[in-house]
Every structure is written in structure tokens, then in C-alpha cells.
Figure 1 (tube, rainbow, N blue to C red):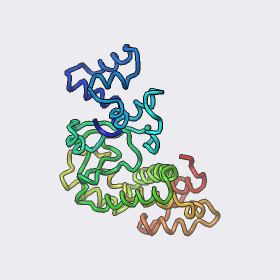
Figure 2: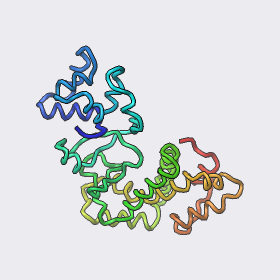
Figure 3: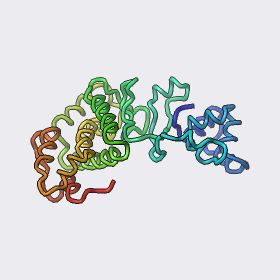
Figure 4: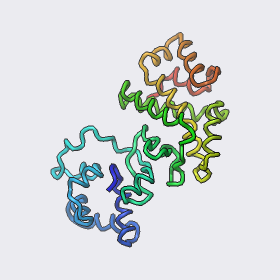
Length: 261
């Protein structure tokens, strides 16, 4: 079993291992009386507590079977993503394992792979060894969470992601991002999708802007009548001297409306 694996992914692997047609196990679960976690426990010969820790959403559905305190501090189960395929293989789980993920689930530091946005298949999990700025941004990302908390950082990260992708769509972003893309594209990542390559290249800029948006101090300045210091920070730290301007600029839009992400 793989930590935080989705029920769908685990059932798919059970079907593959037992040569069962896709979807048949879910149909069987819907027909069998009793809880899913108890039935799956019998099928795979695993104790309830092991399934609980590996797939906590199963335990949460079964009132009275699992102590709810087991779930304290566990990640919210909203977004799906792929586990690092090398970690999955090391767990004898195959190369394709879907897990519940979070915004900071961007790289595998152990194997030096991009596992964030755009990784729909294991082939999209490109090597970031030639681009040390990406793991450095990941450490910065974790530090922001420690300072500002998960909720505030998540909202800031989602806003920053939207802004950076809109900037990229408008003018293909800045020199450093283009440089990251060229390094990743030329370092044996030709099998990765365009979405994964661009997402990995944008990640340092997204984290840099996240730090400013998540900070109550800088957010207050950004929404004030005199946001020049905030714009100077953005211009100096990530925009290469360019200052966002105009009614259609996404950062300016956030400054005026304070999007609730």
C-alpha cells in the first residue's frame, strides 16, 4: 500500500494484480453489504488499521470502525496527483499510483523529479537535477508554510499560480523562466508534456510571488493607496525590472479586488 493513495487507484491495482476487468471491484463493493474498508481488508489480507493509514478517506467513511483521532493533521483530500513513480516502484506498487496531494507536492526530493502540475503520466515526471533553483524554491515553499500556515499559503499559492500562468500566456514570461525551460527541455526531459515543462519552469516564480501574497505585511501594502513598495519588490525579485501595470494585468486585478481563492 502507498501512503495517501486514492481508493480508485488502489482498486485499479488490485484489479491489475488479479486480472479483473476494470471497474468490477467497485461494482462488487456496491453490491456487498457492510463497509468498503472491511471488504477490501479481506480481499487484500490487510488489517483495517493499515488501510486506514494508507487510505484515510476510506476510514473516514466508516463511522465507528476507525478512531477519528487517527486523521488529525492529515492532508485534506481534495486534489489528486501522481506519486513519484520511483517511490511507487520501490513500494512494489507499480509506476502509476494516484494519491491525494497538496500544493507543496511539487517535487520528489529523494529522486530529484518534478511531480507537480502537468504530470498526468510517469513520463511527465521530469528530472530537475540540472535546475537547482526548483528544489530551492520547494524549500522556500515549505518555509512559507511554516511562517504563514497551510491555509494562507495555499490561497496565496493558487493566486500566484493564476497570475504567473496569465503572465506566461500574455508574453511567455521572463528570461529566468525561459532559461529554466531550456535547461529542462535539453536535459533528457523530451518525453515530458509541455504542461509539465512549463509548470516546472514557472514554479520558482510562483513560489517567489506566493511569499509576498501570503505575507500580511506585504498584502496590506499591496491593497493600500500607496502600493509602490510592493510593486518594487515584485519588479526586483521576479519581474526583471518590469512593473505590472494596466487594468488587464492579473496582479493589478488581485491588488484591486483581493481575490478570495
